[in-house]
Length: 368
Image (cartoon, rainbow, N blue to C red):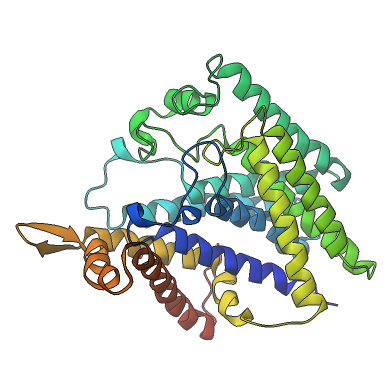
């Protein structure tokens, strides 16, 4: 009997491809709305990408700990802590390589990989220490606790706004403004320390899905109907909760967690039915290239993007980055502004895929 579901690797590959696509638009000004994050409250398909990746981290835990019989031994504890530290280190290497202009004063402590690291660490210890029957209670507690903290510690009447929320206040207290992301007009980190709490819920939902899939497979029952019911139910709850705790990716609100988890339940249900039950294999290899080497794919995409932005090309009386030069001189003239931006992103995905494909064929996988 298979111990792993191919559909889960496929979904992780789809997520990685989508992550690279939305992160490398040719020109942010001319990017289609669905390929951009919501400005603040609200939801777009792009907002789903990172939560789905974190959701899949939770799914993968179930399989990675099988060899240890799901027991928190000293060896497992060391493995968890080692992986957590390595993800932090890889993050800093990606974003500050080759460290020529690196300064401690401007180091951004938290980011995508640190959020994954902290979530992985916490949920690993929880799932290996607590009986599975308590996981739903723990998950609910994360979401309700975060709602209470945000409501009580944010400014009265504007507790969920950009400059007055508890996430920002805690990050400013812990790290100071120079260590936060500054792309929102003010120093504010969408991967803030406090908002890691509901991110734990996202990761835990993934682990619970893997438990459900295993249970249904062992009982030789289909998983699609149950996942669709659970998924739609979570989406409805998210829309109801949105009235009092708005769906917001940058705050990673509890309603946002439910919305993303609900959609992911539906996606996993459909992919599991299509690939495991119907045994369809359309484009499987393409997505497996990303899905089986996800950290490498993410690292390649970020390093390429950052280093290309550092390459300056003479343009009139000044210079422009290689990214902008390619967009304005190749993609925009051929495809137009919006389609050119999309074509640039698609080509960038294919470049990253080609590099990962070489590793896939040679069986080179970055395991952390």
